[in-house]
Image (cartoon, rainbow, N blue to C red; front, side, top):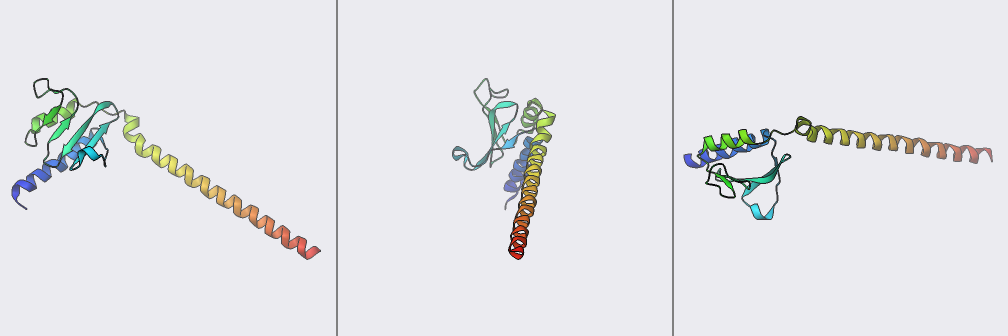
Length: 139
């Protein structure tokens, strides 16, 4: 790989991490953004798209490009991207922790329910089998 590709890859990865730290979550698999990753923010309606060349496109009105309907931040515009991240709404603390915590709690509750159901079913089955054996022996 050439040095330019290495630098572009470093920019893309750094921006990916910065977006996630700012509360954005990836929305992969959208047909219209092949070759890019689209992000959604829990407190922001507009989507943000990170392209393979490091460019970031936001659907919100721009603070950079003369009142256009999108914010387009070039890969080499570190100051513009840093301002964009700084101006992003901070995710609610519960939401930031909540997505992973809530998922963990739901999975733990489901696992416990399955375990308790399995133990109860085994206990009832063993009572039935033992009752059938005892009844057969006494007849």
